[in-house]
Length: 207
Image (tube, rainbow, N blue to C red):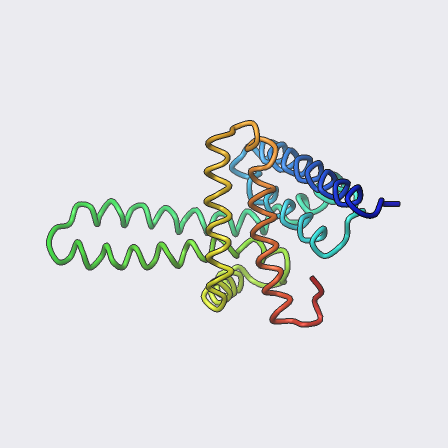
């Protein structure tokens, strides 16, 4: 039974801190289990799934067993999604190299196109894992939904960018903090803002 008043608030804060640290360590461990390349995607999906459950009020789930179950179940599909993102990022890098070799009007035209595509890709990257764990659909559906949500709710998208930027800045300043909270901190911020959108477009969802 939780205490009330300031002691209850302190307990909840400590509980969140310990859980976020624990799930972040699981995220890193299972990423390594998959040799990083094959582990990062299913581990990230499992991370977002656990945090989504907490945001929805499911605070008493068995963290390790739930993480492992999602990791196994989503291993193939998550890696397909991750592979598609890697391909897109690779094409973006190749485009940037080609653009840098251009001169004159073509350089500025394609550079403008590259900036626009980078903004679109950033929006998709912010939303794609929250969308993945909240909705069932195809890989293309996740891309489309992420883009539509990101452009439909620009303030929340800006807050997500700010949260990620702040997390990276803190992680660079304090590497020890990053080890415990980098992945889970970013995932919590992205899932929290995304879930507030899910609740807005579907009033039956509580937050």
